[in-house]
Image 1 (cartoon, rainbow, N blue to C red):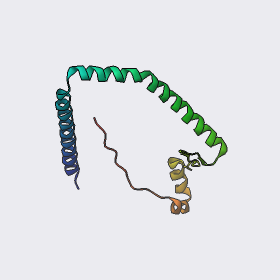
Image 2: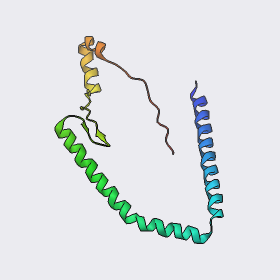
Image 3: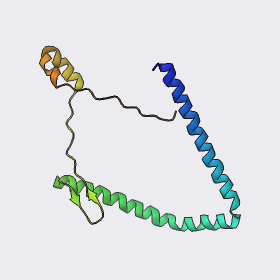
Image 4: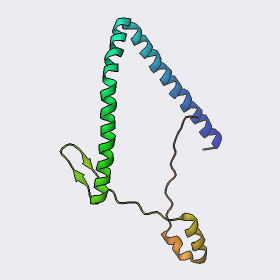
Length: 126
């Protein structure tokens, strides 16, 4: 596939993502239009009453998550609770590619240990 073909596909993807967003927004606008203003205002008032509690719980969760992660790292093993499990994964081994490439010039036998993974694609909005 040529770069031009990939560009065309990417533009088609962007068009259809935009179209889906527009349809979703149009549907939500029409649904909101069916709800009396008094109901929408009451809905907002109720939601506002929960904001402080939700922020508090989110902060507690973030603190506990950090504490769990530190405790599991100190233990060095997976910890299983009644409803959650903190899975321990040892650190991944990495190598300095530039340094090894230079070393491979003098020691070509090290090339046998070299593995190159498949490329990955990340599609982002610009």
